[in-house]
Every structure is written in structure tokens, then in C-alpha cells.
Image (tube, rainbow, N blue to C red):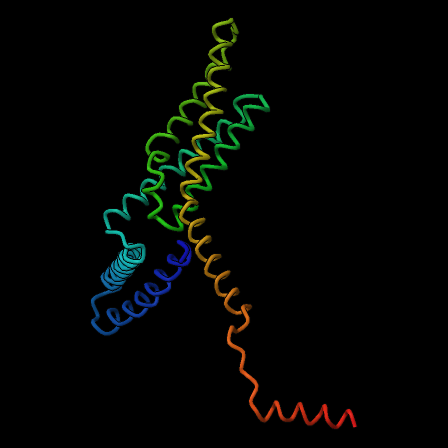
Length: 232
């Protein structure tokens, strides 16, 4: 279930509860409009929070994770999305097509990794280095390159540093590609197993039966009689 769908469910349940509580307290208990409104608002907040916690527990159980593990992965995903946005922010700091392509590729790879981990949080453990170091390194390198290329003086030493940074960015793209392959590895393995099973099933259906029924004596006699009639 998508986050927006969960949001709609929470508020779709909580709003009717608040709407029902207010007139009951105001007209039935006669505690005043302010107190009735405060209690109704409290019921809305409590209901929303309770449903949210239930959804959180349900999701963690569905992925066979503890609440603390699931919460940690969600936190890492949130931080990674922020870092990806920061990477995107460096697009227009440097007027270089090659640099733009490098940043765009890192953003693309990072977004794919994040999407796959969102769909299955257990995949987080396959690419922990991406969240803990690789994405940070990519962001630091782009910040460094943006700073160096903006310097008014371009001496030999600075040009070498810029080239080294570009080369390192290229290497970082390779590292992130490996991270993406790790995330996809379980899906590829599952697909391979499903294909093998499908091929085995199709093979069994297409294989003719080995034991053909033998002709009975009556069938043999009938064939002999037909031949006899035809020869006459």
C-alpha cells in the first residue's frame, strides 16, 4: 500500500470519528462548545496516531522485520532522498556536458536503488554501503568539483585536481552500478527460478507418453478382415 493510500485511510477513519464525537459531547454531555471541540480534536489525533502505528506494525511484520529495523530503514531512505535532491541541485552549478551526464547518471542509479529498497525494505541490507558511504562520497565529490571549477584561477595544479575529481566521479558511478546489481540480484534469481519451473512444466506437457497402448486381438482381427475384404 502506498503512503498516500495509508494517509487517506487514516484520515478517512478519523474524520467520521471526530464528527460523531463532537455533537455527542456538545448536545449530550453539554460540556460546552470549546471543551467538546477540544475532546473531538483529541479523538481525531488519537485515532490517526493509533491507525498509523497499526499500519507501521503491519508493514514491519509483512517484511519480517522488527519495528526498530523497519524504522531505521525508513530513516535511511528519507536521508538518502534528501541527498539525491542535493545531488540534483549541482546540475546547474557547472556548465559542463560531461559533468552533467555524470551527475544525471548517479542520480538515476541512486533513485533506482531507493525505489527498490522502498518496495522491499529487506534489500537495504544488501546495499548498506550505498546508504552509509557511497552516496555521501558522491555528494562530497560533486560539492568539491563545483567549488574547484568555480575558482577564477585555473593553474596546472587545479586542472589536475579537477581531472582527478572527474575520474573519481566516473569510478563512483561504477560503484553505484554494482550497488544496483546487488539490489536486483534477488529479483533476478527469483525470475530465473520461475523461468526454470515454467520450462519444466512446459516440457512435461509437450513430452509424449512413453507407454502406448498395445493393440488388442480384436483390433488385429478387424484389420485383417479389412485387408481381406479389400483384396476381394
